[in-house]
Length: 140
Image (cartoon, rainbow, N blue to C red; front, side, top):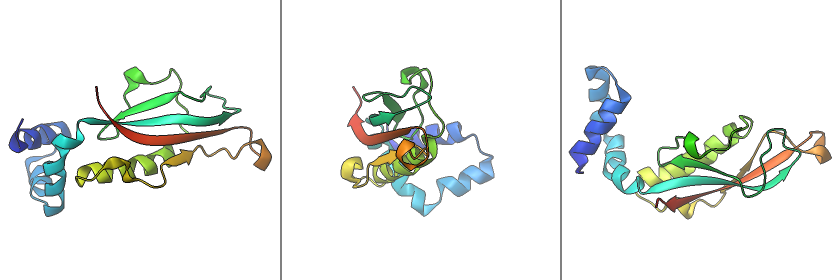
């Protein structure tokens, strides 16, 4: 697939009015995204539970959440229950990976690749704590 085909796919997916799509399509800062998106699509983002204590949703060490290179949760590969209290902090982490991918950089250059749910755990007045480690891996 060439760049123009990929840009066309993105345009159809966004389903914007012709005027709004022209603004997006012609925006200089999105040109890097269009140039990098095909290479980025060979990756998926993985958020793996590395610590879990008292999780009401049942997240366990070793459990993984998978996202495509655009940070969409791959629900067919997700646990039956995904706690939404994990997602706000996880979104910040995923955005850092997404930025690297869309800028043509190694997505795993992220230094701070761990995040956690909002619950502070029993030692700090909460009842549970889940920590995730995020990485990009090539899709198989």
